[in-house]
Length: 129
Image (tube, rainbow, N blue to C red; front, side, top):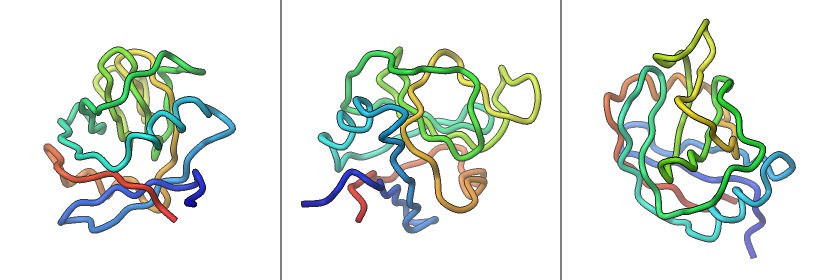
């Protein structure tokens, strides 16, 4: 059995990016997403954030609007998957800020700014080892 530890975000341009699940922060969000994996991503860009609808429905859990570079969140208002790597249109400084509360459930390992090359993103999320 694979432990809830990592997810893999995959795309032709970036190959595979690993994100560590934040089980201690948002355990219900992590479990809900894990149970639906794998699924496709079709993400749009909003500032230095990619977001798009995923087949997961869960309520707010320790949700927040102020985020950190490399955060991966679930957006309850839009059943959305969000990747943050820099300021968004609502940011007040250099840090990402969500449009409305998100459940941060994972952290990108390595340089999250690799996502800056995309105006939209098509890929897949799967269970990591």
